[in-house]
Amino acid sequence: MAHTHAAAWGPGSGRWGHWAPQILIVAIGMTIVLGVAPMPPGNVLTPLSPVLLLAVVIATWVQMRRHDRSLCEYCVAAMPLNPSASAQRYARRLALVHQGSNRGAVAAYLAVLLAANLALAVAPAALVRPALCLWVLAQSSLVYLVLSHVTHRRLQPWCARCGGGGEGRDDIDSPGPLPVDSLTG
Image 1 (cartoon, rainbow, N blue to C red):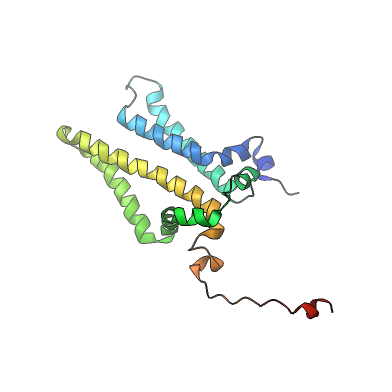
Image 2: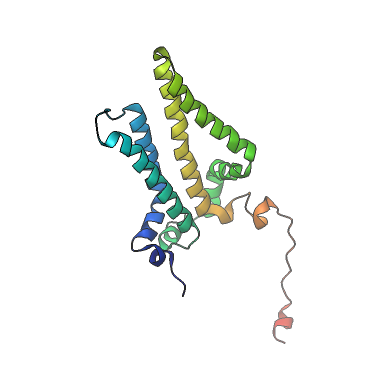
């Protein structure tokens, strides 16, 4: 028996997946807030909050991926009236998503994130503020990645890189139309 993704994961999970990008953006924001203004050491939530935040991020990412593999009526209703023009307007976001298949670009991005975290962890007292600014900037870039993913999912049929079978080719042969008299038999 086939299950819809909402039925397979219980009530509301379809909505969770639908709102996953916004939840991830809030989680990124909460991470930044915890990094800039950490909780006091004696608070019970101090060691628990990063663990809970990580659990929410992982579960939300799973729900987002599950949602991305289904047809959501709310997402369809939110489609722009002129998706081709929207794809041109958001060409940078669409191109960024395709950089995810470039191992070198992904490794460089992860190295920047790691370097920002390391710089914050080992910065001497005089350089904590610049290191914190670098860290906040690096973490904030994750918001743009989430927004790029959402934009690409919505505009994928009009993405220049995905067009023509996913390789960005315009030279794919397609059969011509049949003559009218051949349809009548």
